[in-house]
Image (cartoon, rainbow, N blue to C red):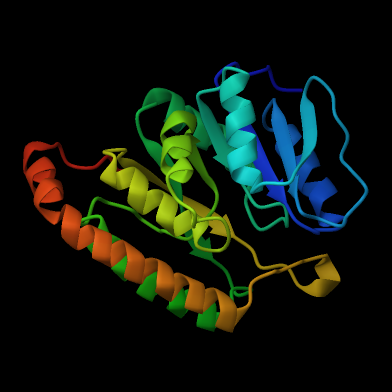
Length: 247
């Protein structure tokens, strides 16, 4: 079992992921300690359990925000979020945490490396979203806006989420990086594989092309309106600031 970190934890939001949740938690716990799971509105009754190294709770509010507030209360400064469905590479948790510990003022973002399992339509679609994100952040260096395997500064993300009624579903990952970039939190990008599991492999997806693409379109429309209002201040800060970190 890895040593217990007092500053960085793994936060896994889960919604009806089935048995895949347990293999995801097992893989994460082999790499980091502690690991927290927050179940958000799920009808799944079986729980990974709780211990000093493992914590599982249910939340009537969005699971990421609930987990972040609990983490701050417990004294943690950073949280690595990862999906509960097995798509994200648990073996890279230490590398992401080390990058965050070296530069705690940044957000450490996974930059996805796709294999043959990736649906082509989704790969192409994320290019559009990433293009809008680059514009909205004045090309701050966000490698990918949709990949949810990343390390956030807890306080900054809570401040962003507390002011927004949105960013609670599929729009969360993108809006989080845009708003954090507006706060001056710079990105560190690290390549990480992503695997789309088949149903036979226990893969569970709650993504719906029509619903979630409409949600992303609405999100970018909102962000662009606010971007235009923020533009003078963003330009001034960019001209005064240092180049974004890269890894």
